[in-house]
Image (tube, rainbow, N blue to C red; front, side, top):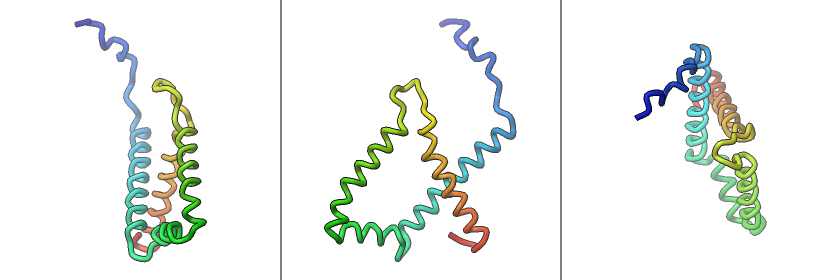
Length: 115
């Protein structure tokens, strides 16, 4: 075993308390966004259920399914990095979108008292 195996980590400092608090807030916003979307998706008479229902009821809607899948694939290609070692800033966009959705649901909870 190499005695200097972890010597390269000696200069790494822990995050500050402000940075840790920011990370926790970001995580909580994403979790609240996921919970809010889940509640919105599975409640009776939801907008998402009506959109999905109308998508499968019409011929034009059925033709839109491959277009939606292709758009999702292109978005995945745009946000994914070409290699494992590289990172792209476009990959952070889904995280920021989910944080914005979480902020919306936090605002809704504060103003109306529920989702």
